[in-house]
Length: 272
Image (cartoon, rainbow, N blue to C red; front, side, top):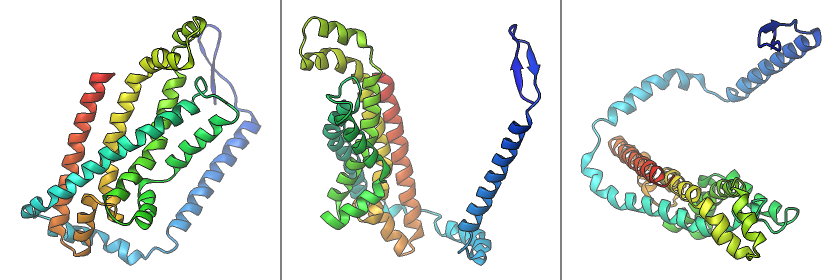
């Protein structure tokens, strides 16, 4: 039975109506039917012999990954540098695109809510709806394999993420300083420079560092499709079944992500 409160805050029980109970049962039946249908679709082509054998295979591969091949570490320095370069340059390349798009998408800064804002929102949604790995696949086909494809893929993915958070930060600013400057006859550029940018700058810096942290993780993956970075080394090791090298690469990626997370947290704490 649902619970409601009296005027003095005392909880009161009220009987569930027959219609409400029927709707609840129908919703539960639909949920169960959806779960059953999803399970049937998921397991339709499953070879259960492989599934039952998976624990033994996992133990076997895990045993081959220990100990890591530490002598291979020197060969990972350049791919690791490429990974950091992809993440950093991809973030920097996205900034001059994301900021104007965010300004055009925010209701309080767009020149046209009916025409310009929908186009800016479409760019943000299109960027966010396509994973960086898919961008990398497309760009490797167009630009060829290498770091450049990875940088552009990370940038295209970052535009939507950063643009969305920045335009939301712009819409949440205090309108009083902006209105005061407009009342004194300040130009649109002056209002932007002195009324909007100072309020958005802390959020902008935090968003940029946060996205850079995410891009380090994604740049380690785009190499699997030929877009440069440590992912290329991981793919080569997987293809040759060099499991001791795979374990070392995973440890290097984990260490890099932990360091980037620490740096990102320190920078955002200092800014915000």
